Length: 603
Image (cartoon, rainbow, N blue to C red):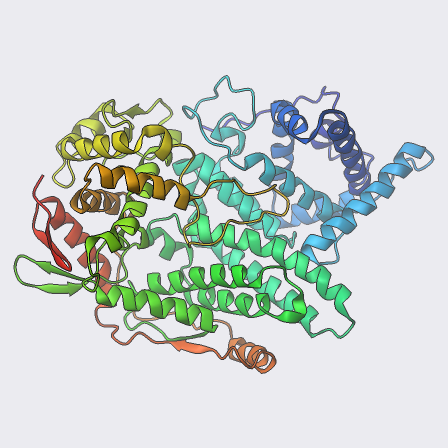
């Protein structure tokens, strides 16, 4: 299925030639790094940054060579030998250009050292620079049509461009590189590849090994940062570490806040399998150092809030399959975030027609947020949040490229053919006529009912407004991110769009039941399987309590708290209860309390 493509060894680009002939290249990594820096700077000076990137993404041969070099099938021993060979220098130093390349290469090594804060070799610096270029090229890249190669002039043209040796080897390569390159950017690139390749890559990337390496890399980042914070050599080293910490934590948040969060809950639990407690603990450790005043970090509150959101969400996911749920000592921000979430969930009740009452706890966050609570004074208080979730669900349905038929695992990338988008709503997409027909008369959320609602909502809000850009990744209500090396954030936000849509929907008298129906449909798209109940959990880091004691001794005002749910007996059942509730919703069997009763009619 995956045919190895041979890079064009006749390319006049020296970097392409290096990628093609690394075994016999007479140049060391420092020299190549300096040469690449020289070429890049000359092109940027001549054409500007935007034109430089446009030309670079059109150089398909260069990207093919780079991907073959970075992700060829190698063992860890072979990778180590490659790095050692690239560190050996046999360059003709009599040539003044070669000497200049070495000087610039050394400067680039110092620059890369500043964003990892780890003593590095020329080869490691060179590989890190390749990941930096790769993440920039993949920012915003999306499949436009089908899995087969298209006529697109800009790289990547298709998922195969990112997986020249297959999806499993790509994930294995990320894992291998992470053992040698102390840069969390590797996991950011992995996330971007999954976003582009979809179901072709996701089954391999959501296996536990990749996320375990990410958590281990997070622990290494904490250890480096905490050691620097303890130094008494003045503010210089701490300032450098602070900049490095921001660079690394951005990628950590990207991986767990966007890639991990976007998975259905069964995949989330698979990703952290065997590392569940460590996943919460590492968020706590990083939150402590992020807020340390001696680190000289620019925006510690933003960092801490994001880490608190990730840690509390992981713990909430654990509540759906562990009985009893283990208690974890955490940073107070994680504790407060978790307590707020539990309190909100515990306040929400759904009354079935049979008279049975259940608590809507621990379901998928993007679905649960749509459930009105009983303490709201009127529907207007709930409407903005329900509308926000409905917009996300509608946009996800169009942009994520997965088949909209229930229980179909296909995506546009895996099907290898053009998707059949519903001509009426222009939201639901199907991998085949068979799936489209099955979805039309599905027992739960049949598209013949859903389609009318989607048409109405999109028409009122305007297609261009809802789908002006891909689904927001601002899942934790974080301020707009400042990506230090990817340019300024966009000028719009999800809140801006939501406010406009809400006004349009209110003026057209769009009802809460219609929005709630969208949430039920989304529950089957985002929650793919029931979770087994587990009784034992891994213990976490052996030195965790010691580290927490050291951290709290330094920051006496941030005392840790134990996450202990008051009632763990119903948590593991929450997933099934909410799924059952949404299924009943589609048949008009549920009444939701929100001040007054809101009846959801059968469709």
